[in-house]
Image 1 (tube, rainbow, N blue to C red):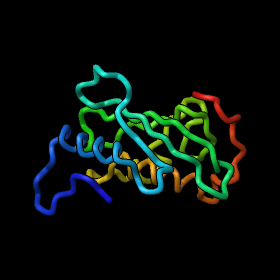
Image 2 (image 1 turned 90 degrees about the horizontal axis):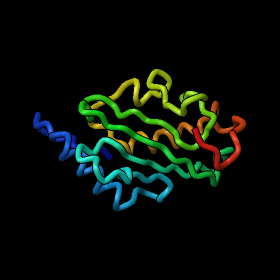
Image 3 (image 1 turned 135 degrees about the horizontal axis):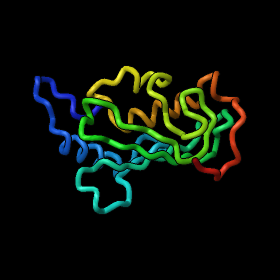
Length: 147
């Protein structure tokens, strides 16, 4: 599901869009293995800093692991994608092994960003990417380690 997609050519302002996403994130998503919300910084009136959590998919090396992420929505969001960075260490083809940054050129959703995409879409797609054949069996850093 996408948020902020209107059938007419009406463009939902950034802050309204982020409020929609916040409301949806607070209600919980699907099976509960992906969640997101505002960062704890109460001074962020521009709603830029977000946190995300992904519980690793079944039948992969990620199964049962809890991954924490940071998402940063700059002033151009949702016209441009947020910056996405794993806080928890992870070994994945689209994640920089030194910084945890999800590299846009290696992650299809960021490389082909559309205004209708949401943070929920990103987290859900990253979870699917964890289960992809090229990532599902990669040796992982010790659980509980961070970038």
